[in-house]
Image (tube, rainbow, N blue to C red; front, top):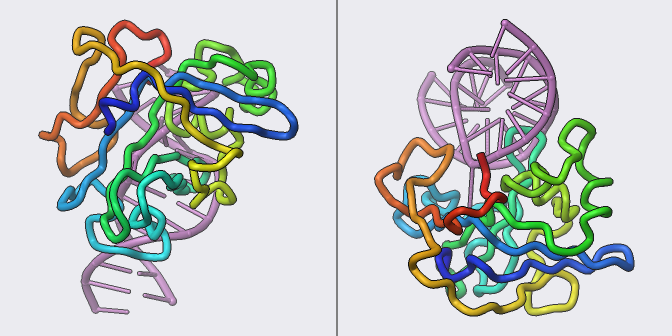
Length: 177
DNA sequence: CGACCGATTGACT
DNA sequence: GTCAATCGGTCGG
């Protein structure tokens, strides 16, 4: 799922406007995965991870940032794909306004999981959003050829480093740094 | 209850 | 390369 989400569009209708980003970087978080929030079972925080696939799991971290995931499995199975970076496609002026001073230039607009959440105004309220709806959703796109996809270790985790569950579009200027 | 720390970022040396 | 910001989750006592 993480691999196949690359190239698809993340769309959000927000305050009368449309925000669109092309997914260029993802990470998978699975069951029996010590890096996953779901590793120790369902809690109030990770509840959404265990819902039916197609929901948005948003978590708060480092006391100031939000990150967004696409829930990928069936009811009761806690797996999700973290969206780590998108290429801004539409609503760029709106995204720039929202990003904090200093980070408000296009090159670093959405090239990180918390940055894209800020650009798309994804916070606590958006946790649990049904992506089969008209507020936040994904638009399909042809599966990218293997030649364009790179996999590597996930970023910022301690356990599970050996899993190559981070995926990104080769050569994309919008991947996190 | 207190201590520790995180699926991050931006500023700075 | 280092580090602070800032706070909720998790775990030990």
